[in-house]
Image 1: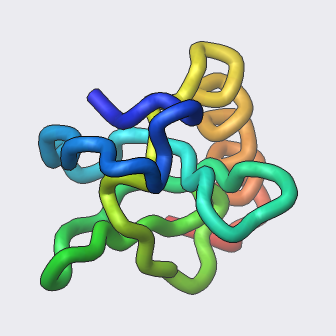
Image 2: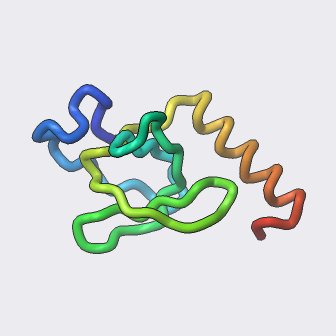
Length: 89
């Protein structure tokens, strides 16, 4: 679904556009990859947002990879915890 970390930014082909709500990982510009929920496409960029809510950020599709099962579980847990605190709907 998304480019592997070894290919990120190295002439990797654009991965298929995920369904809104899919958890992906941004591997560009960060010392530690950021897990984000896919929100949509704006020009050449994918819009991601932290699963617990917050400001969206842009990432090039080739700088993403598919989230591991552990990352998806952590993202769902973070969202449900934020929801229980009333931080997200």
